[in-house]
Each structure stands twice: as C-alpha cells, then as structure tokens.
Amino acid sequence: MPRVSKGAATRQAHKRIMKDVRGYRGATSRNYRLAKEARVAAQVNARVGRKQKKRQYRGLWIIRLSAACAQRGVRYSQFINGLKKAGIALNRKMLSEIAIFDAAAFDALVEKVKAAL
Image (cartoon, rainbow, N blue to C red; front, side):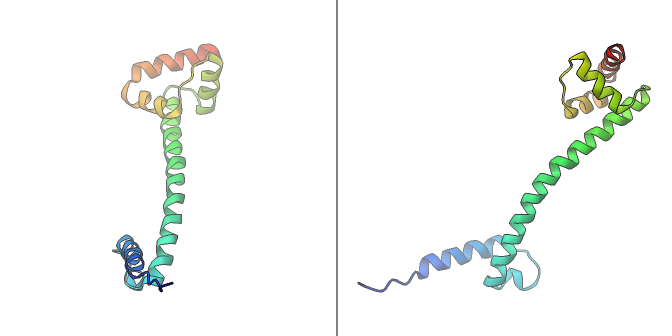
C-alpha cells in the first residue's frame, strides 16, 4: 500500500487557522502552534462574551425601567409585582422601549399596576 502524505490537507488546515488569527499580537499571529492555542482561547472567550452580552442587556433594561418607575413614584420591584398581578405579560426589553419612546403608554401601565396593587 502506498504511503500517503497529507501535505495539501495539512497546508489547508494550517492556512485556515492562520487566517483566523490574523491580527493577533506577537507570535500568536505567526507561529502555527501558538496560533492554534490562541484561536481556541479566543473561541472560548467569544462564547463567554455572547453569554455576558445577554446579562448586560437585561441589566440595562432593568436600570432604564427603574429610572422610569422612580419618575412616576413607584419602585421597580413593586412595578414588576404589579404587572404580574395585573396579568400583563411584557418582557423587560419591551417595557424599557415603551418607557423611552412612549411615555403615555408607560403612564397607563403604571396606573394599571397601581390599581392591581
């Protein structure tokens, strides 16, 4: 059986990794072995970052809602509790958008919440 050298496949694999790490600092952008490790670390951090982004956006929406509620004389926790009691099923993203762009609708929501409490 003839010996198979996987030169073309290996070169393609190396090129793929080296393309991914273009722009990294130091030897990680030039040395294949270090580039391989750097790419794995970058992919791990990218996944972590995608999860953190969701957390940070939720925190932002809560801060916006808290400020909007404070202007109308109701605490954020009371507002969320009142929404549940009133049977209003809006997520925090939509509530913060309403608070920013449609103050009249948010005032109506606050009135319903106060009535439910």
